[in-house]
Amino acid sequence: MELQNNVLSPEEQELLHRAIFSQKQTVRAFVHSYGCQLNVSDGERIRGILESLGYTMTSSWDDADLILLNTCAVRESAEDRVYGILGNIKQYKRKNPDLIVVLCGCMASEEHTASYVKRHYPYVNIVFGTGSLNRFPALLLEHFQGTKFACDTGEYDGVYDGIAPSREHPFKAAVPIMFGCNNFCTYCIVPYVRGRERSRKPQQILEEVRQLVQSGYREIMLLGQNVNSYGKDLETPVSFAWLLRQVEAIPGDFVIRFLSSHPKDATKELLDTILDSKKIGHHLHLPVQCGSDAVLKRMNRHYTIAQYLEIVSICAGGPGFPDHRPDCRFSG
Image 1 (cartoon, helix red, strand yellow):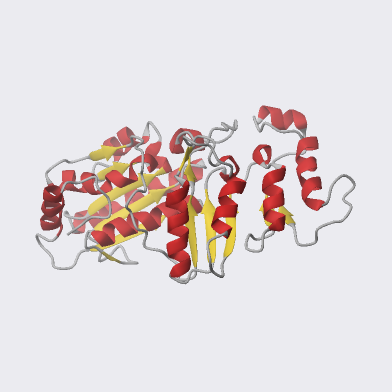
Image 2 (spheres, rainbow, N blue to C red):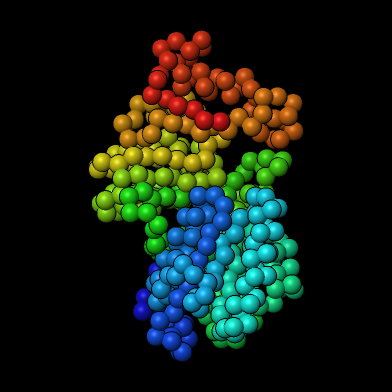
């Protein structure tokens, strides 16, 4: 059996396969992702890993041999909800002591989470963060080899390399182009749980899109915490506008969308690329956050209201909004 990533050696892969199917011919996994679209996309990769290991997906906890919660940490209420669900899972663990309980995602990447879960929810078997998704099979092997609490919240390069997602939709697909964020807005936890900005290599992104289009997908969503800053950290830096043009050049009938954008990185090159494109949806989600420069400064947003309006003005046709482009829509 060949896994979809290279974290395990062939010998370790065989050991894991034997352990998974040591008691049953069919093993089932329940996977649920909370939060943003990037989390949902991570969930598709996790399902891909589990299916490559031989697991069958199930929509019910009742017949699951493995329950995985892919968590969100944007709001405290989201974390409280997950802890409530973990408490409820305890009854399933009592009924089935061999049930594997996994906690991952942004919440798992917080410094305090692993120790808190280990202390208060000792029946949780595996914890891993957003930067160690490709370590999941190795952690699963550790569990089968007797580790009571297999945990890895480190940050690794190539976290998506070789992992084929199990997609939720037959016609639209999300393609992450970068991870993390460097903005450190005052109110936001993302840089602390997703790490600093790391762009995927353009050839990896383009090949993934090309395969999706060839498979009949009609809508491609490029994802990142701040897609506008894509490519700045690459060995040979490129712009997000450049990447959009490369994606558009791929033959096929499909629509390109993207999330999320930050006003400070919305360049004229990007806006012109969107407006001149035949495949990119003429819609730009550009969060304004607040109408007060003083509040924006305290929020550490790195732009003013005047700068925000200038971006809107460029897309609408320039100062005073002459030659308004009716095909350009904003949401903020």
